[in-house]
Image 1 (cartoon, one colour):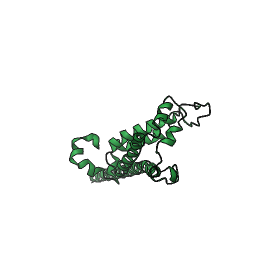
Image 2 (cartoon, rainbow, N blue to C red; image 1 turned 30 degrees about the horizontal axis):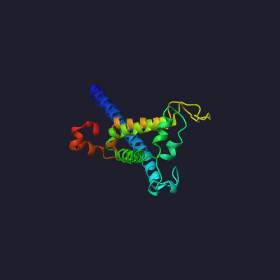
Image 3 (tube, one colour; image 1 turned 60 degrees about the vertical axis):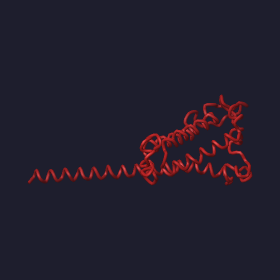
Image 4 (tube, rainbow, N blue to C red; image 1 turned 120 degrees about the horizontal axis):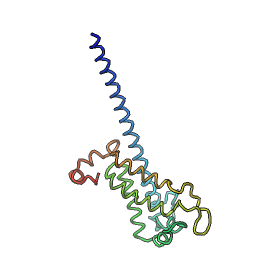
Length: 196
């Protein structure tokens, strides 16, 4: 009788432990889904603000639909780093505008929807590293000798966004509150795991 009661108690403890583990896993999946959606929204918001000139970073007159350039303002003001002249040369170029806007839209849609997260993580990380290089937080002073206003010489918000993209991609965060399971079931994605 004691052995029976002991085995019942052990299985009860194991069942509670399994339930706690499952609850934590569910909470972790939801947390990653929230991170995924909010990170994707950062890219979508930037796209729509530059497209329509919503009045935040881009005024109505500077909207892409009104003839403004999504890259000219940011890249023409680069005043630090070894790529300063390269970014100035790219500022306002039609190909740079198109690549930037298509990148913002594609990364934002993929990440919010939870599809193609690996490709979105690579593209988004590349975009964030280029923007990090444009702001060059390593510099304490601009090329004109003014303080650069860098608050951290290595890890700024561009790096945090890149890490978030990588984390949600490797965690498969598109399966919760997203289309990740459906996407992974497509024959082309099953045959080419890098598309997940």
